[in-house]
Amino acid sequence: MAEPFNPYAAPAAELEREIDPAELVPAGRGERLVAKMIEGGLYFGLLFGGAVLGAMVGAASELDEGVAVGLMFGVMGLSTVPIIGINLWLMADRGQTIGKVLLGVRIVDVRTGQVPPFWKLLLLRTLAVWALAAAVPFFQILDQLLIFNHDNRCIHDHMAGTLVVPARIGAPKKG
Image 1 (cartoon, rainbow, N blue to C red):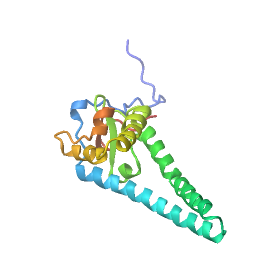
Image 2 (image 1 turned 180 degrees about the vertical axis):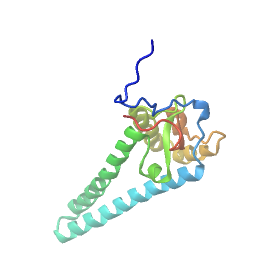
Image 3 (image 1 turned 45 degrees about the vertical axis):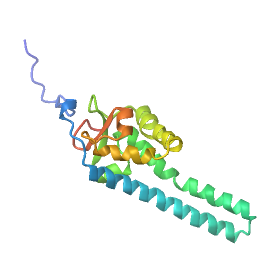
Image 4 (image 1 turned 135 degrees about the horizontal axis):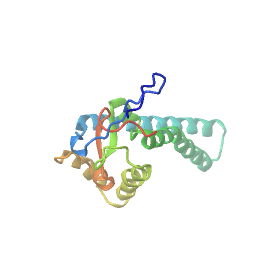
């Protein structure tokens, strides 16, 4: 016997749908490039502002030159903490960074279409690339050039098993 209709029951609509990884369409190369440029501009602006502020404080306080330079670099480093924090939160929560949010793209797991685990985004897409860029000459350029491959995926995408897609494709944010 069927359940009787309850007009006071909460709606049972299915809000999230599973996506077939075969449906995933890569985001455009231009969108990814502009997102990266936005992030680079934010970091540069904060580093430059931190350098100017640190230099002004060092000069105004008549500190020893070595201490003033140390202060300048310290302020430069601290100035990027808010952007790094916001990007880490966005990556963990939505598979995005500030630039990706503004351009309407997100990072998904290439096998599931879902937001990848945070450790994968942090270790394989970010820290491993930084380490390789520091150890291997021209790695960063090679990594970025691979976006012209048939699947629009860079080396860091292959390392992490991720794909950048339009934000409307794939699962909504974790939660």
